[in-house]
Amino acid sequence: MDLKQMVGEKAAEFVKDGMVVGLGTGSTAYYMVEAIGKRVKEGLNIIGVTTSNRTQEQAEALGIPLKSVDEIDRIDITIDGADEISQAYQGIKGGGAAHLFEKIVADNSDKVIWIVDDSKMVEELGAFPLPVEVIPYGSQQLYRLFEDKGYKPTFRQDTNEELLMTDAGHYIIDLHMERIERPHELAEWLDGLTGVVEHGLFLDRVNTIIVGSESGVEIIEAR
Image (cartoon, rainbow, N blue to C red; front, top):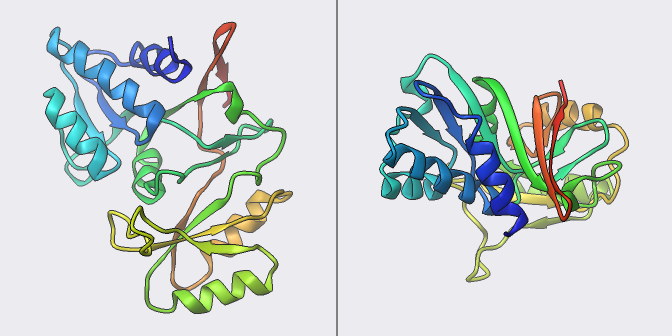
């Protein structure tokens, strides 16, 4: 079985009857949503909160009852992928351009589970480009600022080589930093920049990590 499918199906076991469940976005989360859809068909009673238009379409096709994040009081559990997880269990997300909605859903959840294959487990963050979601107006100015800082920015493009537009109508500037030695400091600085809507540093947010490798599934209790 594919490692992504293995951890996706394992994560679906954490979902219990009556829960409000945050449904992540991406190639690993896809299998988790499929597995939950199967359980819903078998009688599992949950409400899903999706983190992207893509996941919403998938969940609707599977018959998973959905509400928006603004229609619920609290989310019991959110299951999502990650692009990098450090030894300190900090993460980078946003490879699928959904990190703004993913962070909103995660921040309104009692428990956050990340599902990854073992290639995503790294010593420190930064080899994966850090996504920074920005409003189009003034985005060139932010690009120049990141360039001056030596962060090697690139605007993310879609398949037509146009500037990618997120579900919320923003651009993404990817920072190719290679190593992020002080993620909390960087996150605070990015949070303070006018025109930056959100970034892909997910710090002190994950509770449980499910890692798939050739030898099986490992469950790590992070915090």
